[in-house]
Amino acid sequence: MTDPATKRCNTCGHVKPLDEFGKKSASPDGRAGWCKECAAAYNRRWRKDNPEAASGIAQRWREAHPGRSTEVSREWRLANLERAREHGRKHDRVREERVRKQVFAHYGEQCACCGTTQRLTIDHVNGDGAEHREELFGDPKQNHGFYRWLVRNGFPAGFQTLRFPCNRSKGKRDRCVLQH
Figure 1 (tube, rainbow, N blue to C red):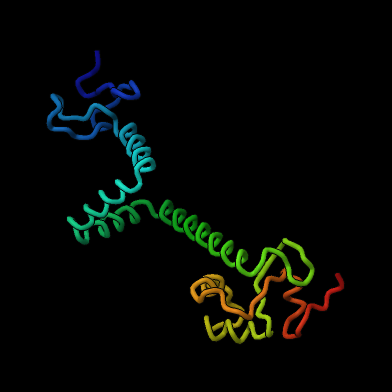
Figure 2 (tube, helix red, strand yellow):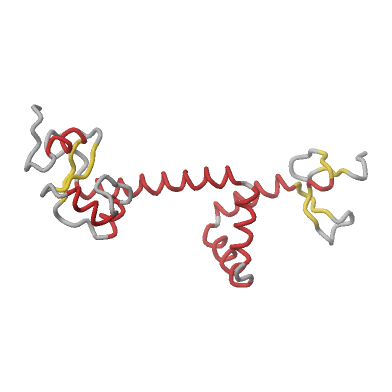
């Protein structure tokens, strides 16, 4: 028999304190039959298996509670700063890798000079990279966002794929001066 302050989860079978179960007024003890952990796992699986339905539910909630989702997000971030930062860093890495793949799929996945596929960069063919970065980002050494700029602008002409050492060797010249 269980202590009145505990309950056995119908899913995992573990006996847990009542506060580990969600509230359910229709239940005799006022608590759900599943523990919060099992309910969360089920909900994650369901959202993964039913992305369109989950998106529609989330959209309807946001429409019914304008401003509340922003407030909930802000509260969560404040309570979980390190997790929020790590999530942001992971999202940024995934996005940057996706953009990088798009750029090299368009401009080529090997160096136009030596043919290697390692340490690839995008080169300004006419040698005006520093001036162009100064114009775009206010700093001739700033590259952050350049690949996104290429995608947003429809992969303009005047760029090519080079290996980093070839790009550095070329500089403002019309070709790489390394001996390959």
